[in-house]
Image (cartoon, protein in one colour):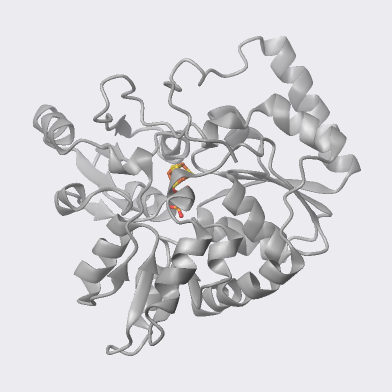
Length: 328
Ligand code: 13P
Ligand code: SF4
């Protein structure tokens, strides 16, 4: 996994523009996935052209569930490294490929395993809950893994007086504390994309589009959660947009999700909220965007790069992931 990419991704986020090249790449991907019994799974934040050709698109929870049940020999995880690790832990007999191994995650990186282990050791009477956006090494120090799609349900299922450590996302942790009345101890981590959304910019948009509903991912700061019509995981936001009577939505999460929103509801208008950072207002995750069609083709051809987790870490990390799947 690489260091945080500082440059704007706006220019990099271009589809394969040459239609003939694109068609050839897609043809090669289709042939290779058939020949090799491979499945391509993509997160909603992937480039549109990847979502278009994926066998399965989902949020972090759905991707984990799907990986657990697939009978494919190869899983191409078009997402980021921790998603590949989760699939590799759940499917030890399968080859899990992430098209670009540099596709890390600032949130996962905000929680180094050795520091998290010290935090856990300092609070021995606490149940340890980790967001899925963590390394396998952090999951190995965890009792239950959660995603934004099931965190509330899982935490609600625990006794009211249970002491809980929650890491690494402080905004999601704050949200769960607020809606459940818990006082979980929070790790101070965040996702640089979600944490930089601007309240002022969203309020300005709302003035211009008074009928629009505001959709906010819980990795965003509390000030944004409080003005939301819906706070939820990517799948929950999609669901809300599909079923709500509103015709316009201000979307406060990584803007890759607009592709699936628009595909589900072609008659509705989805407005991506801008970032606070004046240099890059597109709110795209540079890690997610590292994957391309061409890298997927290469990954299938070379059956690399493989995501691997050492056996001991995988054994320890499997237990809290399985608990999540059982509880959600
Ligand atoms: P979900 O798809 O679970 O909402 O996760 C959002 C995210 O930030 C993934 O990187
Ligand atoms: Fe990580 Fe944020 Fe990118 Fe999701 S959007 S992969 S949480 S850096």
